[in-house]
Amino acid sequence: MSPYGSITLVDRLNTLCNPATSPPAQLTLYPGVGHDSWSRTYSGSAGHDIHAWMLSHSRGPSPRKEKAQNPE
Image (spheres, rainbow, N blue to C red):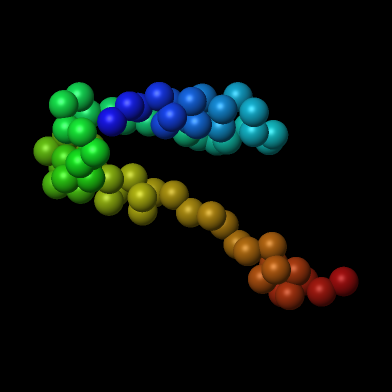
């Protein structure tokens, strides 16, 4: 499976988004695993703690919810 579609997508996200993505989008490639990147990602065997990473991010309040709390 070619990684170039993913590489191009991440590069474009980081260069074309306005406002810029913060933090920048990242791509992790595991050589030799083909399409099964999730096994190494979710087992932790790749050295990344995907669960801690996901829990460290939040979207913030929904614009609709914020507007409902602060009606004009």
